[in-house]
Image (tube, rainbow, N blue to C red; front, side, top):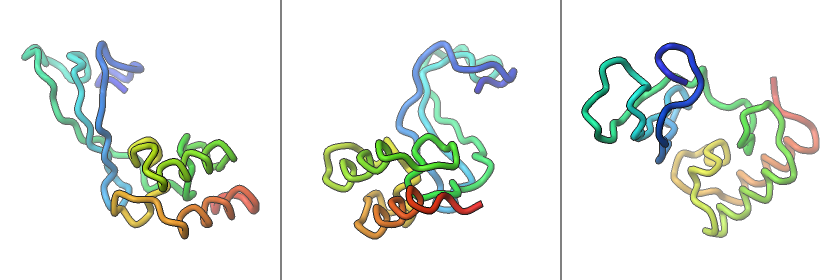
Length: 116
């Protein structure tokens, strides 16, 4: 979200990293319109509040539900086929990996729902 409340920026953002407590996300962006007076033409680093940690392990889309496709994403991350930044809510231990225990927790969320 841009500083003026609008959606998106005029260039890409990358390398998101979630803080250990889930309160903040840091990312790089080449967008020149995320903040006022950003005319330097270089990539900048930003930190934004998330509103809290995801309520559900494996909720890649942050919609308070886990899908089978998100479980598959978590398995691919655990196997090293995808980077953990593709679904940070799987990495509840914030160690840069997805474990069998984290996948099981996500499967439970599919079966019984996310805690509210």
